[in-house]
Length: 117
Image 1 (cartoon, rainbow, N blue to C red):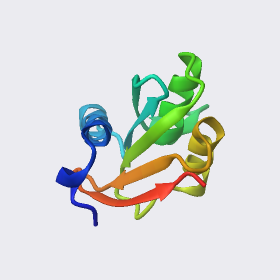
Image 2: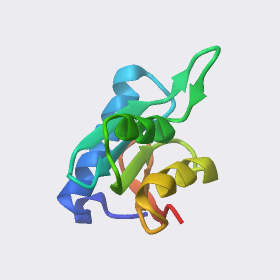
Image 3: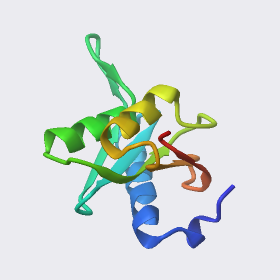
């Protein structure tokens, strides 16, 4: 477990945004990513009959659709133990293999930081 108060303020911000998206939308996961300019993109899980996307993949797609060319960091708030390989791959596609992915529990406590690798 990572002491969330020890996080960089910008990383703490994306964890807070991800947690808010999850709670506000009543979805299983919330996520936020920060692009190379410092802009953030926030999303929740998408579950439609014709489209199913995790919160993190949705946030990455929103960043790409808005013109982001890279990512500085990503965060996901989830009950899962870690970010899925597919989620990490989406972050890696835009941010590169060293992009940090903060994985937090539903209380906002960061459980681990992994690379998109």
